Image (cartoon, rainbow, N blue to C red):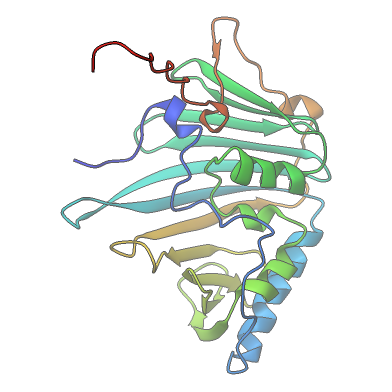
Length: 268
């Protein structure tokens, strides 16, 4: 059976379906003239609000399809606790549905990824802000960071650049608080997002359909426990790695061993 990758070493390089497209890449198009202006206004309001937040924490429960060779879809999931403090502090604590745990932290100069189950960790030196660290993490290290775009100060521009159509589906009363249900499209994915009709426009649910992938797998995420003033000491962003843990390299940085030179002459 074709299932998700469970080896932490492979996890460190696997660019899964949930990873955002290369951040900052120019996308063709722009918003279609036929796009619902109220839907775009809501998307932009969410993007502007998220990009201006100086700190927040949120719990995200997500699920994603892995399409088997038979065409059957099998869903896996995670629970993530994310804490962000601009300009240069980020931590994500992950619990996967199979019990595996992972911690990711950025302290303004170093990205650290640690697996307590497998007692291995990897680091990458990238001084700067969260935008630069997230870009490096997804693009250069080829790591999986679901919904990475929501962490960027450039989110409003990404919405303008990528979204080619958007419409209001309904106002959903079964989500607390009631939310405007939006359906939108980019060149590569279709997505839905639920944004509160009143109050802070913080996303409460996201569904992404990867329409160009075989079987059109989906990713979904529910957002709860939003906190816009979390207590976050600097120690939170410096992972405590036990001495018995083994340091490994991100697989994106590893190169295949050079093949030995062919011997000249001799019997063919």
